[in-house]
Image (tube, rainbow, N blue to C red; front, side):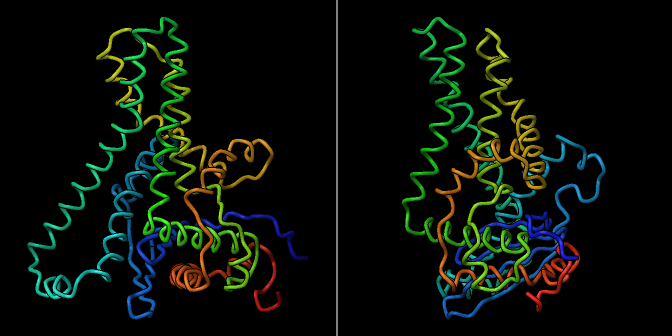
Length: 317
């Protein structure tokens, strides 16, 4: 007897890139990009992660930190790949004659870019709210109120940043591909054949989204910093920096649980992240969905998944 068509965890995930979608299944990932000439380029690669198969990197809480680092590294890699199709012709010609040493320089530059991105994110979403609330704390004598103010500022800065960049034309197209990525995963995990029609009618929100993860990082930090208080200004600053990996680890575990469960408590916890995805995902067109499907099919046998998980063949649906 066929199983009920409730959402079932598939294990695949991805992200939007410039005019395309990256999908990852275990250690294999595919990047599908709509080239300027209209064709779809699909590249399949392996990514073992910064720690490979090391057991300590898979421990609860710790694994969230490495998963975050891996998402940044892989995200930068696939973004650079997608952008390469839209470089000027002279840049493309220069790439063809690039020396091996220049390839190493690109890897170093990518590492530096990831590190700088992390520093900017921590400064903007962690340190800036702290500094503003500390300044206002000179006029507000209630420590709990100052902690609440810091948390509120952190949430407002995060939401304001997401909302402001969503107004940019290029970012809006990126968010449309983000929607296509989510729709493909939702289509599969609801037990539907991966066709353009089925994907288009699927939801563009998903509980395992990176947007939800980042929002959880912000919300968890609000709770953690409310209860962890010290009087020394320098120690306050140091604690906020040292606790970032801990907060990321906790947030990852929440997302991990949310992706495999659909009970009422999980739906309530996931609701803020799902709301935020109304900003970071947009409805894609059919051409974008076609690109996303190409990325999925390059790394994931969705027909075998439907047969194994839902108990029926895709051709019978």
